[in-house]
Length: 261
Image (cartoon, rainbow, N blue to C red):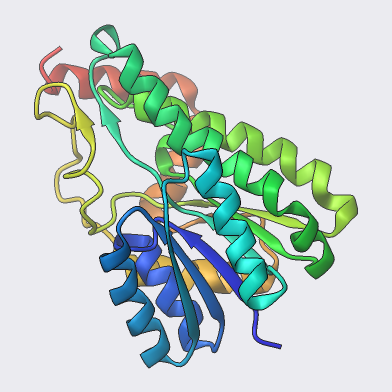
């Protein structure tokens, strides 16, 4: 039977690519984002790619919309195999200039919404022995200058995912954490920034294609993996943060100096 996959943040970027990657495999995809028109375009693309699609416009930070998303997915298809918590937003600012209201908003989207959707979807996911995909970031393991607000939300998502993975093992539900690095999407343009500066970027960095990240993610779900780091840059930063914290602190101080601190 074709799997049923819910993808949040599905109107563009990695979310759109994820929806199309599953659709090419014949999946039934339930698309979530705030804009109905953009979702309808992706739904049409998904059907043309060989899948079935249902577009459910809503804001995943709103409880009524979260419940409606799960209810409509189950009402349309009767099951849920994969929940992809992809919706998220960046927030780049010096830590001393963080706006508490903006930080709360980022946490509602990047942390609370994924956990709450997992709670709402757990019964059908358990019945299907399904998978929860948490789209994190290299910022979930490494925090660089001006990235503290965003990185803190991804650190929190990583911790919750780690606990959730252990707690759901007895139900047969897997939790996959995906850690992309820079990806060629509108993510940074849509981020909250304090002064039009999103922080130091390493010279010569090459953003990944969202299609590449999506294909890797679908394969990781099929393989039952627990963590996917999507590039050598992410893998190197992740290992360095764990085995060489002293040198990493020195590197981040140099990054701060180059960013004007």
